[in-house]
Image 1 (cartoon, helix red, strand yellow):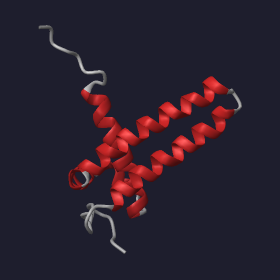
Image 2 (cartoon, helix red, strand yellow):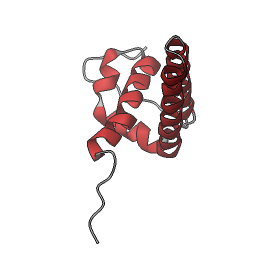
Image 3 (cartoon, one colour):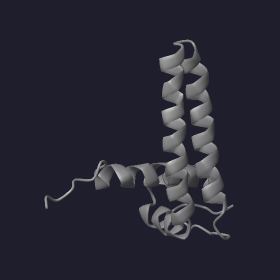
Image 4 (cartoon, one colour):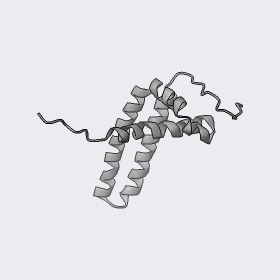
Length: 113
């Protein structure tokens, strides 16, 4: 039996999970450097892995529905793309907020407020 190749490479799946987590870490901390603190983002991502995986599924479904806007009417694509983006952001923000209280470590040279 031939080895089945996954539809999405591992790097793509990692990007689908890590990029929203890094962006949400930046929003949560108010510091651009929070996205580049891979250890902190990865630890936080491990605490909310199941909700984030569900958010990826929801985002995929929203993207599929957004493509229907292009198929049905070209004008509808703007509304459906915006709606898909809002659904995706809400899904990942809800997953991120579902984690228990998390205190990110202070980076060297940064001040905690």
